[in-house]
Image 1 (cartoon, helix red, strand yellow):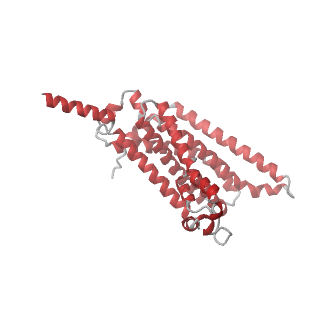
Image 2 (tube, rainbow, N blue to C red):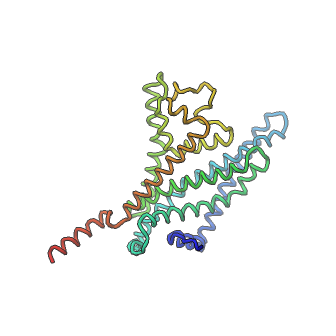
Image 3 (cartoon, helix red, strand yellow):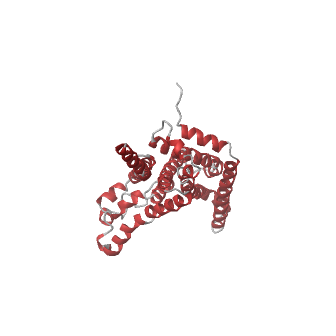
Amino acid sequence: MKIRWNPIVKKDLRVTARSMRFSWELFAYNVVLMLAFLLALVVIQGQSYGYYSYNNIYTYLIYLFPVTAVAQVCIVALIVPIITASAISGEKERQTFDIMLTTCMSPFSIVLGKVISTVIRILFFVVSGMPIMALSFVVGGLRWISLFYFMLAIILLSVFSGSIGIFCSSLCRKSISAVVMSFAIYFVIYILTFVPLLLNALWAYENGMGESMLFLLLNPGVFFEEFFMQIMTGESVFGREGSSFDSADVGFLTYHLSQGKTWMFLSAACILAMAFLFMIGAAWRVNPMNASGGKKEKRRNQRKRCSA
């Protein structure tokens, strides 16, 4: 049975594979990742000097995984909106947007193809950095399944960031404007989701945090903090069952969601839902019958028919 690929994905991957720029991007990505690895190794070695023997350094090498993983998360979070911000607006600048709309693909297929091609491109970066990350697994202490979970988390972040970039690209005619708007939405999601928690902490501190922490389910930064906490310690950022952390401090729902891995999975579902909404919004905007220009053209054609 022949697999039918999205034409947008095939075209973008073919152009990417033939570009020398992509090779240099892979090289730069691995250089940054290696610098983060070496810096973490120097810090770990410096910390081991205060213990009884230098052999203790091997017990801390497992922390190379979160350091290199966080470095990759930061790089992906920064470059994905830049890549996808020019997905639609770049077509408009090259005056190929109208040609793309003449194909048999639906607007959502176009948007989905752009996001998938970006995710695959990011996976090339992440896979190229796996030998560096694997060094923290060789010494033991972490399961190899954690590396697979990290790949899934990176895919989730790529889809989320790509959906924001493609949404902003569908709204703007210039790529630079789409990039600026993408990071503005980043600010809203990553920073302003803490506002209810801070306001509750300032005004109702004696009554606990209540359910204001539920807004953090939408924050990818908190998701990755919980993700790394679960992998390294098996506990939640918000506390663990049997500790002093109770429902009176954070609210009934937050307390029970923070037990086990429930918070992490629910946060991943919320982030994926937001990505889907951004893609639906981008598809609605890409549709020429919904865009402002398409509506004007439709009214103009209707007036011509009436006058005729």
